[in-house]
Length: 171
Image (tube, rainbow, N blue to C red):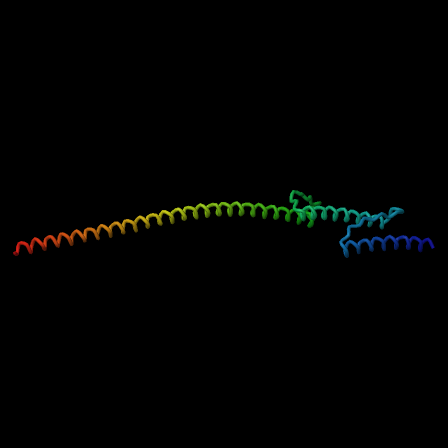
């Protein structure tokens, strides 16, 4: 009967631990257990589970900070074999690099945009100057056409005068 009592106590503790682990693995809940009673293997298992819960709580806090955009968090891996801690460090470093790269690209794009605006302004000024020159050439052509027309009229008058003198000398 003492063996049954002890077995029942151990079974209850193991069932409680198993139920808690199922909540962690199935629902993602972080659970800590308090098992009253004597210090035995089930208490050691509970302590290990609570240590795991603390570790997961630290990781979830780090993940939440990252999700909120805080990349200043600095997770400290518990060892060289801490795959989660090392992965979080690497992820934060990569995100910081990505943000730096995006910022630099944005600055370059801003500079290119400014250069393009200056170039567009200069092109506009050049088009204006070309338009003015074309108008001046057209005006000059009109003036030359008028001068040619006037000279042509004068040549006609001179030709008429020469013809009149030539006819007057024949008579």
